[in-house]
Amino acid sequence: MYRRSLITLALAAGALALPLAARADTVEVAGVKYDTAADLGGKKLVLNGAGIRYKAVFKVYTAGLYLSEKSDTTEAVLANAGPKRLHIVALRDIDGNDLGKLFTKGMEANAPREEFVKSINGVLKIAELFAAKKELSKGESFSVDWVPGTGSVIQINGKSAGEPIKEPEFYTALLRIWLGKSPADDSLKDALLGIERKRRR
Image: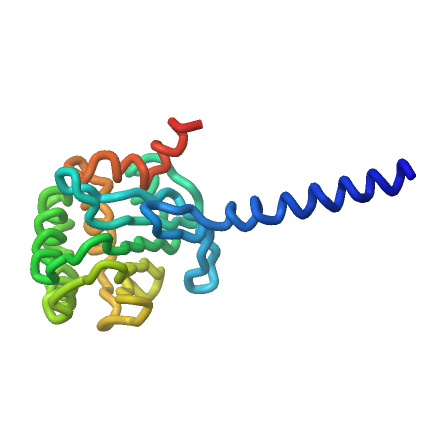
């Protein structure tokens, strides 16, 4: 009887643990779910951090950063030569032209001059892509992946958009928009670096 009770308790504990394990596979930010792991070019990535971009009191989009290993400083993220992914989901409608301009402005404000100059080709390409789309509607998403040997690969709503951008400086300059000295949003910078998560513990 005692042994049977132990088995029953063990099974019950296992059943309770399943929902927890399922929840541990994703992180939810403003209703958007980010997987805690991803596969890119046959390499495993982990979610370094995810957060919300605010403009005044309005939520504009969520962003998640995936790396081959967790890093909590901008320098460590940029020095990581492995694959990377930045995934953004719109929380409100965003004008495509405005998005392209904000990317350009953010890169120019944060990247060293030489790096920005070498990124111009990529800056023009990504601005053209969003101008052609006209609008990133609420719920739509895009990713910019860094794939060593290939370049920066842009996906809009899960579909490849345009040819890879070869210049490595472009991806570094792109990440500086959120992780640089004048980030788009200070709290989002902390969230992407996992700092906010650490403070909550």
